[in-house]
Length: 198
Image (tube, rainbow, N blue to C red; front, side, top):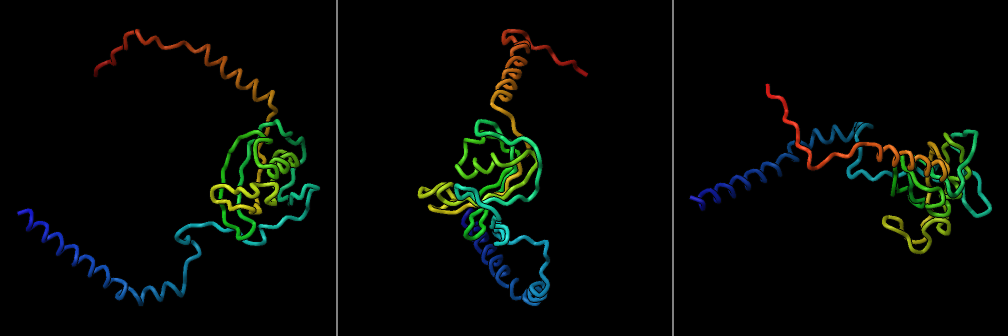
């Protein structure tokens, strides 16, 4: 019986593959029509975002060689290296625009990232959006990392959502710990109340 079922399975698979192979031939006229008028809403497969060349350039340069471009200006205080920042960012390779990282609502110390990114953050005011063109020497240099090859120039679009000083962050942490300590601890030996029955 099991041999019979396996034989039927093989026949069904062969028929399915033959039918599948015939579908492209039948669908060729439709495919030609669709190719003539592709929809702008269709994403390419596989999805590999690439930033256009015009969005990989900066208009100013700092003494260190960091390229910058202000995309949305804002006035106000700027974070220091020891401050904690909250940012939205997109990182891509300057050479071909391949996106290697992006994140929204990412928090970290301004001085705890690559040199060019840290320098750029300290030029920004809260609410501004900038583009950083980071030469390899201010990025990952000869070592590269993950999808970033060695000696790669990088570009980041960065929005500085907010920042706090190290003292403000320490005070916030202390307040959270204080509130947690004031919460009554559940007694593991206490009996669990029965749920009312309907």
